[in-house]
Image: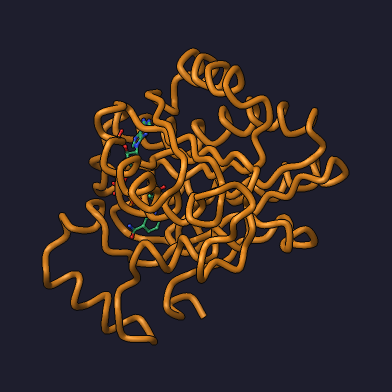
Length: 257
Ligand code: NAP
């Protein structure tokens, strides 16, 4: 894709911008990375292994986009500092940060092991903090930024069996609203997207019976797909969304309406 050439069908122009997407190896993160690249952004994708990112990088490159993969555990401060340094050495400005990496370790609260609590909080909430802090400093210097945090409807309403996950995703919402206020004067917007039930590896493990029950509860009568989330993220990442900050937008087929 030649620089300055808008991608067909993409209304958001991200040419000349660098977007960092965590959890870009599959599911929602892959769809976001592919979409941002299709709109012209150079994508730095993060996952625990570079091998895991190959499929995403290939999809982007085959479509004519530019992307590179970096390995890091988002919950590890040293890993995050190292990888952001590596990315900054190659791309001095980072315009878009999507904190998408996330895990579940479901179980009822009374039976939940401490490490299941900690892993989910570290990945989903601490990871969002660590990347926002490191990349936020780069955005401050550039006086421009778009931070988009992937929360969940489980952070808006309770979900039995997900005390750790709900707490992490509700935490992401509080974090988003606060840093939106802290960074607004520097031309950096911060928003959260709260997906409902989206078909990915994360939800594939659930029994068919549960999936059908969820479908019954969704007013639009279908489960979401990763592109449903990527479309909104792409809009929030664009220059047109400059007056939208500190918001939490549920993309859930009307489930929480
Ligand atoms: P997924 O298919 O399981 O993908 C999770 C991604 O996160 C993978 O790329 C994984 O990469 C990465 N990841 C996990 N732990 C990591 C760590 N410690 N360090 C770096 N990367 C890590 O999940 P998904 O369904 O696409 O979910 C993406 C986001 O949307 C998550 O935050 C999730 O909570 C949220 N969400 C999903 C749904 C849904 O219905 N699917 C609903 C609401 C919210 P590697 O394994 O390759 O490292």
